[in-house]
Length: 294
Image 1 (tube, rainbow, N blue to C red):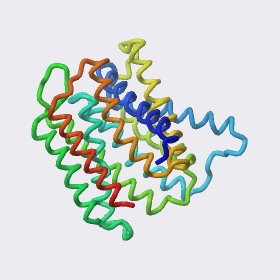
Image 2 (image 1 turned 60 degrees about the vertical axis):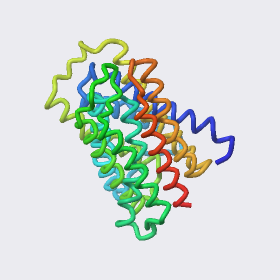
Image 3 (image 1 turned 120 degrees about the horizontal axis):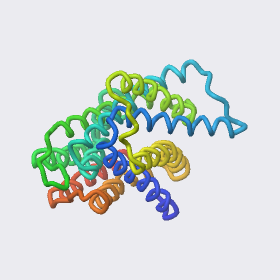
Image 4 (image 1 turned 120 degrees about the vertical axis):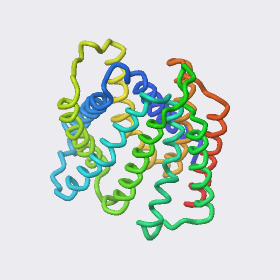
């Protein structure tokens, strides 16, 4: 990765990291399912605006793209995003970001069994053991990162694990069936499919009373939709296209730092020595995985 890529990597990490903080701030104001649905709907409106303004883009009509993108939206976006946002009711954004950083280990492990050209090398095995070991350390110590110093309930960890497995499975699915499809078209259908999967459930199961949401709650929702979902995707796509896959890997290293420090400054969350050790172990594991993929 070149020095030129560093500002773009840091900016994307800032978008994703602060979006996680905004989501953590919003869990006391929105039901997680409602927050997820509204966030995806707002991000989807951004993609509609791009289609309306861009002369060369037309709303996709490829049935194959729709079929794959709908599955990706439900299982690769709606379920993981809802799980992560719900997990924030039980633990800090910093702990959640650390656990999510270990997701490449789950992807690499599953890819070994389902993608013939993604077999495990020795470095990848070491990386998987480190990354999952760091996550296990956090879980065994019951780290929540919450301001009151309470122990994690375990529910948050299980929800993040569900999100990681679902995202990893759909990453493998996308690699296998969707590599030749237009990334922006896929993302647009994916966001709308996820929104349409989540919003009806939210309306059915929860009271969508927006009267209890204050201005800061709406700001957090709009911020996470615009920067954490829509702009974040566009910048991630730009980074990969211009600087390569290493830029995407470097972003995952920076996100926990931004989320952890931002959570401490803005939400009064805590960062313990165990969390720092866990971060070092997880990031080291992901680094080994990336080296083994070269």
